[in-house]
Image (cartoon, rainbow, N blue to C red; front, side, top):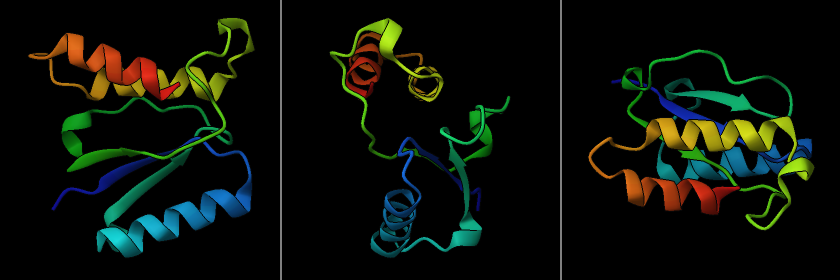
Length: 102
């Protein structure tokens, strides 16, 4: 089975860890079945989304109404991954979903 890609946006360590462990517990997913990326600590690496069973993007302090100049690097990165993870057959739906994420 391919791993799940878990992208986290929360800059607080305790909140990010609690979110991650809750996701594992409620999703019935083992830690070894995930690749965890915290965008507050690292940049989004080049990747092929086909290598993953799914993409899970956690919550964070960002808001869709934040001015573009106020958005941090990790907020912009989360929007990029959301666009890349959407099926090409439904671009309008994906644009709305991606815009609402950040």
